[in-house]
Length: 290
Length: 100
Image (cartoon, rainbow over all chains, first blue to last red; front, side, top):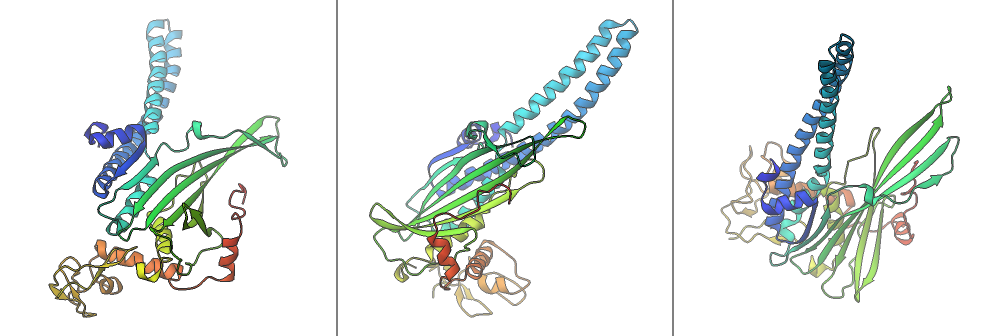
């Protein structure tokens, strides 16, 4: 699915890499479906362009090699054309590949939202709308915090960069008047370590770790006394009751950690994880509300 | 007679559509939407989920999710002391350490 095949709303969301505003469930589900299809097409395009870059590298190498031989044989015009042509072709391939990568959407985030809403759609108040503020641009340079120098610990230097990405804010109203909010903040932590090699040179290695914090809140329509508390995993979860506009709201936090051997981790908590948190918060409602 | 299946996950509510038949395994009356066909005759999503050979649909998947949330998180179980400690402390320690 190309950008032009999307509906105007989906095209706007894909171009802005963001979904904002008040949505009815049906329209929001349609939007997610279109964005997921667009993302699958973009993934295929990126894979194709990456192959093109590999071919362009080989052609550029051959172009330079053969071009130099041809120039040496007194055919400077042909040789130069081959040399320059190969390099320009490589630059064009790289530029197009990077351009496609920039437009890519995080498929795991979209899948999470789709799974979440498909499971809870029957519980939503049909008269109310879903308030959405989703940023799909990922950990861009603008979200990177200041460079932090860590103790060297035997290395030449160790630097840490933290990308804070509060990408998801949702607010849903249930049939019984309770409101649920879900917030996800991702922290991508980049660690750069430089060490000295045996021959005197320097080598820098980069490691990434992604921390996701999912915060679910249940807001009662009127002051209530929560009936018991659900079970939480003390390693990764925390439950608290906070005051908000005179109401006792229950807040459940859960942390997720992802690591990848190569490159940035792209995993995300699943929709089932988010629904599990909402489900446990809903189990705190007084008996008459359940 | 109306369908006795409860729809929804967070706010369960009766389906209330006219019943067209019943579950051959548990006997509850069901509408067309909540009837799943399989080797032991028509069944409700819960029985279809717990018996092999039934086709899976949105309702059976939702029922499966509901069971897993209930089992995983203990449903009506109460807080243990460890749970209480995690609630009382200010911040979950160690989550922001890079090299774990």
